[in-house]
Image 1 (tube, rainbow, N blue to C red):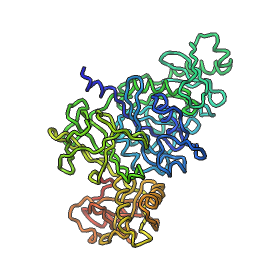
Image 2 (image 1 turned 30 degrees about the horizontal axis):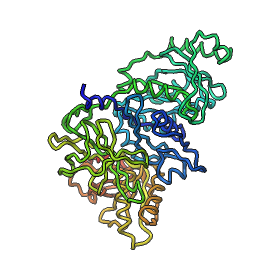
Image 3 (image 1 turned 120 degrees about the vertical axis):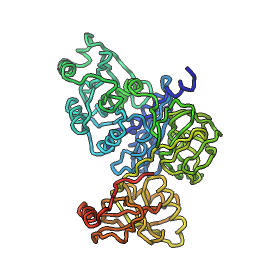
Length: 528
């Protein structure tokens, strides 16, 4: 086997998704510990201390103790090369999260053991289902009082509509949490909390070990034995094909904060998931093992390094091998080019890369030529990946700069942040850029916009919330929106590409527009 295909087979690229505060960033940190990428995990709760989680790099994230943008982290473990896409966990997350899932081959779903499936998890889960990507579940915080594990499994099955298979089983929770039972090896792993160090004190016991009575206690042992019997009799059978098709989720129990069950989870995760998957283009499917290089842009981030005022385009490599200074073809720009300053990113830390393979994520310097969804490929074998969906914003505001002398900075700032995909920008018909209508998926993005315009572009803004909740793209080509018969609470707007759209305050207004304009076609999503 060539080293080239061997390198691709070693790759695992996954996203971590969860509801806010379920412990996703903490789990990410612990995975990095095992990979030797960091020496001491930084808790996101450490707002009053100097240490912050490695994956939370933006100043607003450190202040609030939440993840606002998606981070990309790479580390090596047991011969594998692992790319983690850490998505925002805040309930007011943005489209950035959706798009990051488009670059992943599988997802880890983190669930709080005391709360079960929460609202944000459902939204993200639906995106995974849409792409049929495998989902591995980590039920976290078992060192705190948690729901009954059978209830947690039932919650996942009923709310998310996916079958579950517990790979391990918790013994107690909270102060009574004694560890986990590995169903494959039939061994009990008893853990001791160790405050974030890499090495974990681990004791293994077989089910017939006489020491178990002392380790677990008589009552806990009896309950545990009953649960295992019930699980073996009534649970789903394990089916690896169903896992890889996104129909069955393997479930692990543990505690990221105290390292209970994190390393066994990582080891088995690597066995359950596959190397990079094939990707659909407009006309064919691209095999990751193909020698022809191809990649697509799924994220653009400006001003990652304030000192350099730079802008980085993140690319998911879909096939072949990337080499520094190689010539590539930018499909949307219809030109050959060399990718400038190719880097792999550990949050704010960067490292120039000489080579990268299918499954890897690289960041390249973007002078303003890339957009989300763009395809980069080998000049000798041109392909074009399907566009990434633009999700419909749910909140809208009219935004203008306070100081009219700063119009240039205002336009540059709003345009760059829109190109990153954190916000969408619209204009009223025949209006200039002195004020824009901003649409976001989560209202936190308004705060991020205000913060970034002030701190990165030195522009103060006035923001006025608008009552609209629904947006629709007009499908009919050449239709003048001014000729439409619309309800008085409907607004005609256009996006930066000149596409016409309508803003509505209610479903009633949408129905009115369709009823009073025969042949009018509206669509809920745009594409990049």
